[in-house]
Length: 104
Image 1: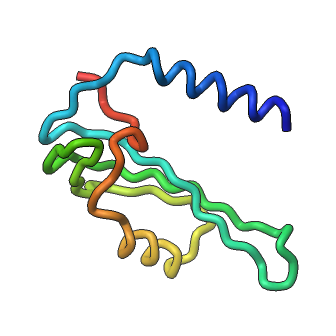
Image 2 (image 1 turned 60 degrees about the vertical axis):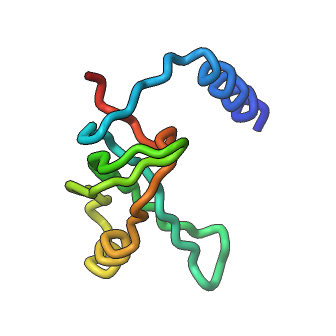
Image 3 (image 1 turned 30 degrees about the vertical axis):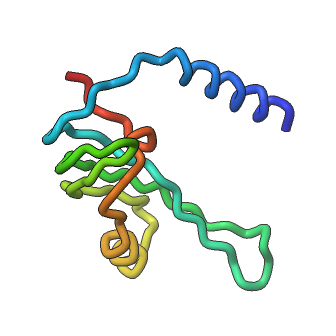
């Protein structure tokens, strides 16, 4: 547990000094998220799926970008229902810090 908090502190400090990327319309990036399902019988059993979504910037706002979803990849073990759930519920606007942007 201690190691996790030390890593979080290191990440926060490094983010302060990281060079800010200038975002532009048409820029590409990858949004990574995790989808977790807890079983009904026991909260300790979790089914996790990694989701990678390739996005393109449509418009840049202050601390927000409007995105267009180009492609997405989800764990091979995901059912078609989960794939449809992710595809139909992808947000239209994201915090740009949540996306790994392609370096120009």
